[in-house]
Length: 405
Image (cartoon, rainbow, N blue to C red; front, side, top):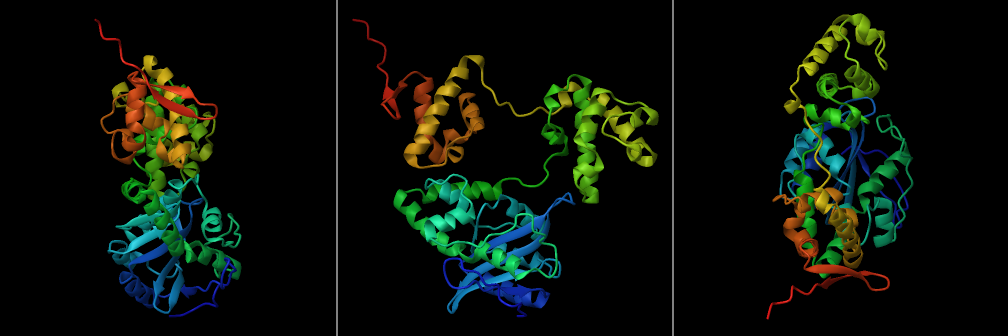
C-alpha cells in the first residue's frame, strides 16, 4: 500500500502510525483484510456547512493483526468508499464513538451501515459517564492523552498536515482497547445486554433529512403561527427542503427561516408582494424561482388543517402533570443509584409516552421496564410514595386501603 509518512502522537503510549490510502487498489486490499477481522474501529470526518448532505472528507479505520494494530486514513476525495459496504454488512463488529452522525455519512457514502455496532459513548453511559467525549473516556479508562485537535479544521484540504493526520488517527487508535475495557465492566455489572439493545436501536434509527413535511417544525417560533399560516409554512419549508436536497445546498442558501415565517404570516400574491417579504431579496422574487415560490404559497393556503403535520405531543393530561415532576425526580435518583446517564435512562418524552399509556413506550419494555417502569407504575397508581432519607429519595410502599370488618 502507498503510505504517507506515519502520523505520530503520544496518546499515552507509542507513537501513532497511520497509512494514507489514496488509491482504489490499495483500498481494496484494506477491505479484504477488514472483511476477515472479528472487529474494527471506524470514524469519519465530514463537512456539511456548504452542502445539504454531509460530505465525507476522511475515513479512519483500525484493526488488529498478528503483528500488531493497523491504522489507515482513507482519502474519499480520491477513493470510492462503496466497497466498504462488504465489511459493514459482514460479521465483524464495528466499534465507533458517538456513531449517530457517522452512520448517516456511511449510509450516503457506502450505501450501508454496520450490521453489528458497539458505540463506546453509549456503553460509557451505562457506567456512570454522561455524554462522554472520546478524549475524556480514553483518559478516564486507559490513562492516555489524545492529541488536541482544532474542531474548525478543514478536513477537505489537501494535503493534510501531520497534526491533522495525528489527530485523525487518534480517533480510532484506542477504540478496540476501550471496547475490551468497557465490555469487561459491563459484563461484571450485568449490563452488556442493555448496551447491545441500545446500540441496535441506534443502528436501526432513521438518519438523514426525514420527511420534508416535518421540516417546518424545526423552524424557531413556528409555534406562534396560526390558521392558514401553518399550512404555508409547511408547504414552503418542504419545498425548500426538496430543492436544497436536489441541489445539495444548505437549506439556508435556498431560503432563510425568517423568510418562511414572513411568507406564512403575510402570504404574497404577486412578484411585487414577494419583493416586500422580510428575509427575501430580489433573487427570490424574480424568474422561475419567484413563480415557483408563489405557487407553493398558494398550495399552502389551500392545505386542509387536518393535513398540517403537528409536533409530537410533549405533554400529558392535566391530571397527570404533577406525576411528571414526581417521576422525573425518581428517574434522576435511579440514574444516580444505577450509575446510568439520566438522558439514557429516560427522557421527558419517554416519561410522557409512558404516562400517556403508549404501548410502544420504551419504559414499558426491556431493561428500562426492569430498572424503572414498574416503579413508575407503582408511583402513579398510588401503590408507592417517595420519601427523602436525608440525602437521597427512596421509594416506599404505601399501605393498601383498610379492609372493612
